[in-house]
Image (cartoon, rainbow, N blue to C red; front, side):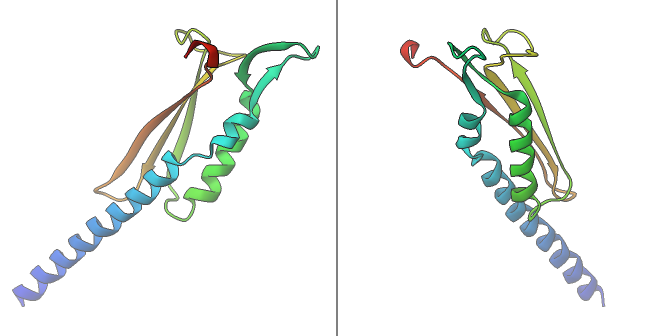
Length: 131
């Protein structure tokens, strides 16, 4: 009888760790494969007068696209996740409220009691002439 209890506990632990690591890798792949076209679609390069301007992200569009991406991509793997954004200005020294050139996207997900996912990705608009 003691062997049955031991094997049941061991098998349950094994399944929990195996399925958790599989979900962790699926969530990680989804997060690291954020579609780069979203960032290109949210980049503003011309002002309202039609004049060229330093490129920056449209924050409203960006948040809408990213939320939709995670809703459709992560819903298969995890229901308990949180996405947060932080926009940084052109000099990367202050938190920005308009015309932001850098975005930090953080994903926190609770997978199971053994695994939590917490990663941040940074996307920046840079001038191609200064690279």
